[in-house]
Length: 609
Image (cartoon, rainbow, N blue to C red):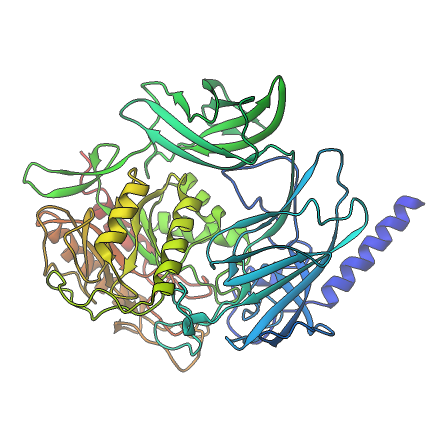
């Protein structure tokens, strides 16, 4: 009887939640949107490289209110919002504009019973841009930065039993501020898209002990057959010991054979010797090694996380003709892939679900590419996991923001270095470091891109030097298509629509960071029915495909002349940009997939013996 009553109560609660939520607006939707509910929204573990057993997501319906900036008397909330979708999106159920003169408030209750020495961590995947957080009217922390995760220990603010009230306040000036904001614009047009305000990644709780692993950096070394793990503890002491156990891959429900172990104490890095025949990660063989990292106090294990890594190396070297080439695992590789904006017609910055997030990566692989340039946006950790497991190299852009100097693309730049304020510079440096810290251990990331074109470009030599010294394991592309300085590992030019090589540097790898942009409008699958554009435009799959193949053959001819990578614009349509390989709703592949796969594989495999 009790069981039946409980089931009835759950059903009623579920039906009430459904009644409170509906997709907002009549804008374009993906096929996944109709499957999203408050009960099933984003249940995948948000941090695949650092998983513990006890965690709980707080995604679902929250109360929300939009109030004038500085007005703390919220009164009654405006309604319900579906977290983790931003307030401007259809999937949020709200689809309202906030702006720099207002603040967005969130509230929800949660119940968590703490036991003994438990500590409760509150994690946010990403909140754009400035947020303050209270638990039971106790302020537990603040954060600025729209692209990186952050965590608060809320143990002393939660009730040991019963309901707790979580409240979040967000302010985001979008492009009217000086913070990194990527393609967001208060007046979307052309290449600029709808603003994203507030929570746009998973919010979740995690139980740990007083001493736990806060973060870690994983650095593989294929030349010396080892991997090094630097683990940061919440409460380091001389009695703590780390133990790492590496397995040769994993199987659902369990691990395979142990292939390596290592221990360390006193805060030392853990150096794990790897077999000389360790499998090297590549787009052809994206093999991941799984591992457990345990922390001991005496004989007691106080924390344990499950993670993964890959044995791989990114570098440059000259070929037999003296041309500097990009290298993967000490072998030349032509990196070829699409410009990936990571925008969604229904969720804006947030994919409807994990399946949708993986879909773009899988289609990129299906198209015959081996690389993605993640364009002026940072993704949830799960997106990088999909790149890791599917075998796609990532060029990671820094989201742009602020003003920069004029744009000179065909020579080294010698003009004004900066139009940024000191506050803007400090914000950039803070957020760039946080992004690199967040993504430091991701196997698939091979290249950091601090600037796109001249957007907010400043003190390029200084930023490049810092980036290379902070992460010497990866290459640095100083400014993709931007103002060029003789620094970093790559000279990157842009040319639309077809490939051209108009600038060359014999001391660095030369790449075509953007080209293409072949547009095609597909009726019924556009953001705005009467508006849209491409760098060149055609009205049929055949014409678009013929042009794509023509450009690809031109690119092939430029490889022996010096190009070592190329980026085609782009993965999907984005708002009024209609130059995607797929429509914005991911419903239609706009080119002949078989033909583009054939030519793409020819380019991606150019250096293979």
